[in-house]
Image 1 (tube, helix red, strand yellow):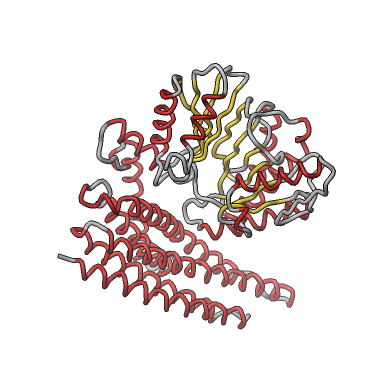
Image 2: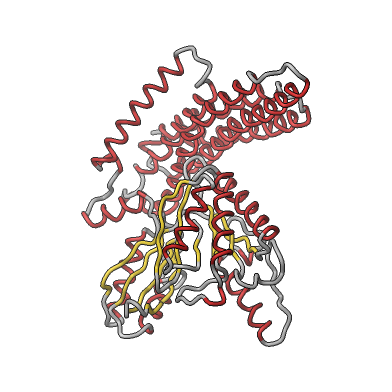
Length: 500
């Protein structure tokens, strides 16, 4: 979700977005603001595709934009100011960290951009917070302006700013919601006071960042917010806090603006609050319920394919499904705990567990399909011609690469199941005791899924000609097996101990 320092020239923004699309990414959204003079371009795809798309988009921005002539109310350190990778579906945070590191290295080496790694990708604790990255960078520039040396200390790239493109912050983070609230105020002073009072830690609202800004084109003040922990601070709660604090300033909030995209869970939470509902689930929304029905038909088709005798889908996809079922049971117990007065003390921790369970459920469901694709790719490589020495060498190389992929996917399944088991251990401890047997059932499913998926890792490793690589897979398998045994025993024992 890269942020570029251009929000006025639609043709330039379009060129930057097209660079990402041409690299194979799926464009999801473009948000541009003239006063901020900033655009947020959201695109998605497999990790390798998104890294290439991000590189091409930043490369285009470096060619077309000049930070020296840029004017806008939003803070920035470069024409491509921040480039955060956010995990969705089957992608893990580790995947996003790897993507951030790869992109930062390329931007530093090939485009000569000083690149800072932040949030989960940070190599240095002081760079974990994006605001600290900006502060360190700007302090170095101010020192240089007063005759001192330019003491930039990026993670990648040169220790001097690019003459026209500045620098870039590349990170890996969870999804956030960006909201702007407009204040009917004569100047920016009240917006700045509201922003200072609403942001963490002053307000106690976790993960809430805010700035008070004046928008000349609008002729009004704005409180610009990033909600980085939507599970503990739902976006509608942040807006309500701004409204309350603005009233204390004697001004009103005339409206708000969503920047980019918002998770469905946040929309449902806001709707439930507005309607006075204890909770609102996706299955209660007509269009989403219809999508769920379509998914159930897809599941029937999958089970028919599994039973058909075709080589794929097979045990790997079935293992991923079993792990996803375990994660779904973890979510079920969380949802039966959240909102119950008896368990209010555990609600914050339970919401966090729910977010972790849902992330792994989505990931494992995606890995079902990826396992089938990996097996199909392996079969295709085995069918390559092998008449000549050159053909045999090319075939062997492609088969070896396909075997690694066919081993990587079930290993990802097993590691995802480890996370599910860790969640279920805590769910069994904190969850509604009337549903604890479901936590135990989920633990049995996740453990079985992990062990079953490791059989596929072992099978593909045994076929590899690179024995050192095969041994590395076997070593990782042993680590995972030990962890699964420990986590499974903890979760099941805890669940049994609490069953009434």
